[in-house]
Image (tube, rainbow, N blue to C red; front, side, top):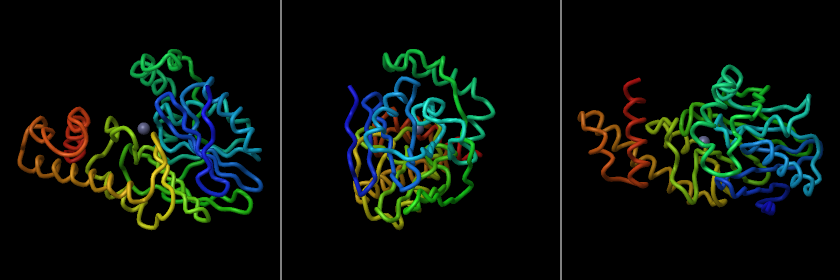
Length: 270
Ligand SMILES: [Zn+2]
């Protein structure tokens, strides 16, 4: 069963898809409808396209917040020949240069996570065709949205979307709600400052990559938890402490901390 759109501001709607609890955000303009993230499979993306019809969309413009499968594998289903698909340079590079490997890796790791993901290996991956280095502004007709890269965090190419006239900030997996942050491809030492820069001028609803929409206060508290973890990682690394000892205490659950500390040590080792 398809979820309902949640209106979080004038002309800004969130579709919270139950498999992996992943969010799609739609921003409506007079000429174009921005769709942030495209889900994991053609079947899910077809369901999304069907749901988008309720919003009476204009020309679709797609954004991938980062290169993980649950945010970009629906691209080929939603995009037509002329559809703009925006992402950070690093995200486009990963998806354009090694699409077969990206699909195979995602299938190997996640095809068993849910019956809907069983045929992940057959996905045709359409890479982004518009890139952002640090900042871009898109005119949707009567409203502008900002695409912003603020540094490494959950991945090396996390793109945030800001809708200034609505006060909305869409953060992809730089923010996680109802589940811990995911560190598998992360830069745990850089992450809190990256998130902090994006939250500096935030006021209204904040959309995480997964889980419920929250306010800026929630996002700042998660930034603080990420900062505490980063401090522990830096201190442990400086002292030559083993990963397991550093991961024994701190925010989030133990498996999450273990992965974060290992990734953080690799980040600090360059
Ligand atoms: Zn992710």
